[in-house]
Length: 526
Image (tube, rainbow, N blue to C red):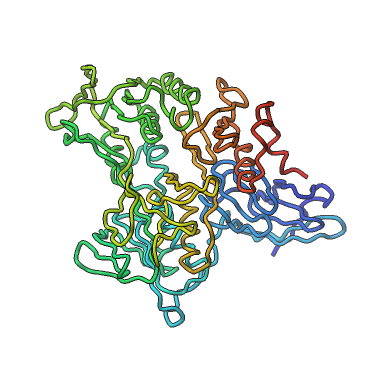
């Protein structure tokens, strides 16, 4: 294997990372004492430059979506990445750093996985739901050495895919084909993960440990992860059955909406949630005239506060989006297809499309032998994501004890579902790992890309560092003198640092933050 001189050892500071190009291959170097480690330099999720993130001990935190990798081996530690970074052998000779590089350098590699050996392990582990939590759980079982049978069940007739792209990049594209899958069909076959697509489960009997399908067949399990998520909530409105009334939660819905949008000129979006606002931005970029109707007076006010919500509203308005806030739709009119919506004040809005974006209904009705939460029929779980003997829950349906507050919490975030899927898989194997991951989500609307770390269901105070008008800022959501969550725009590296400080429980005091800007990245510099 060819060997290349990289740099002088003294050029690398201890406990820091540095990007270096070798033979047109970007490498990320870290130094621990007199040892130097080299891994690929771009995140295996969406290719972010990792040198713009944070090095926290042996963890490299991606600046875009907070995937984490082990600096010394390239192993991925936290989603949304699914693959490891290639790692390259280094040596020190006469004060110079050398690296061994193959002629062809891959940018990512599949983690090592156990082979299926039923003679060694006859257990059947079933995962119901192939979204963010389910897909990563199936992979984690194999990565953690499980040699028994893995069955991954989905009601959709598609390979598992990234749902976060549906309202953003996918809806802005020109093709209404299926979104790119997370893994190929060959991947599941290679690692003996049985992918049962287009299969509807009508009952899960937690006492008997069996699943019953719509065709009457049944399947027994030794351990089950329920990760069924939900389906888009529909409204009982006059005219809701007309053609070109859409919800957006699954790939099929997105494909139908995109196809219709390419033949439309006007759209009304009901709801100013993240899904609604992302759809509004995407359809506007497709050339449609979009109106957002919402009972809220300001988008995202309950999650991000009024100033940040007004920022998003202003940017949307500048791009041509019209808002009818503080209102609701009374009925939808049209002859077979949508022609207009009528608001509660009598106003008539012409529309070729109507998109309902008012949340989801949890898919837990098939569960028996499990006590569901009265408020929303979510699944209460313990710190190990276990609901009852042999049954675990993850993702949107799981109501779990927050490691931050101790209160039972339910969070609808793609990355959090992945984090829970990994932990649940480990606990299905008896490893007893408590779920203590820090929540993180992102949204992209026009040129605004917001990152949000932590979780705040309420707050007493919001502190701002930076400039909301630029916009380039951090917003701190404070409850009882503790920072519960932080949102940021154009402060990606600081958000990566904050997520690590939250994980390490080393956040500065609120009083310190009241004094002004804080050197977040500097907390990880030697």
